[in-house]
Length: 199
Image 1 (cartoon, one colour):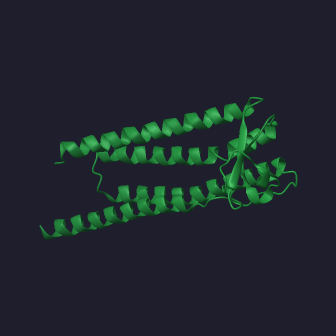
Image 2: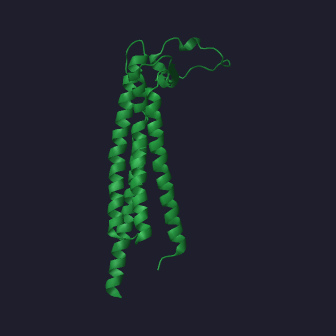
Image 3: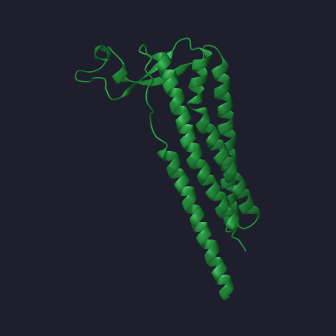
C-alpha cells in the first residue's frame, strides 16, 4: 500500500505540470497574436562588434566603455509583419516544447497516481520525454537562431546576419535528467522483480 504523502506529492506535481502546460500555450498564443498587431515592439540584442560609433556613447562614468564582445538591445520603430513574425519565432518554439513536455509529464503523473509509478511503462514514458526534450530542444534552438539571424539582417545596415547565440545545452541537460530518472525506475522495477522471485 502506498503512502498518502506520495499520492499528495504526485497530485501536486501533476497539477504543476498542467499549469505549466496551459501557461506556456497561452503565452505562445499571446505572442503570436501580438506579432500580428501593427506597431508591436520588436527588440533584438545585436553584437557590438557589428556596430559603429559605440565609442561615442555617453552617460557612463570615466573608464567605462562598451563591451565590444557584448550585445546592445535595439528596437524597430515600425516593424513589418515579417519582422514581427521572426521576432515571435525566437520564443514560441521553446514555449511549445515546454508545453508538450509538461503535457507528457502530467499524463505520466496521472498514471502514477492511478496505478503504480514504479512500472516499466513509467520508465518508457520518461525515456520518450527525454528524447523529445533533446531533439525538440535542438530544433527550438535552431529555429530561434535562424529567426534571430534573419531578423538581425533586416536591422543592420550591412545586412549581415548574426550567428547563433547561446546553445541547446540546457535542453540536453534536462533530457539527461529525464533519462537518468528513467534508468533509476528501470533498475527499481528490475530489483522488485528479483525480490518477487525470491519471496
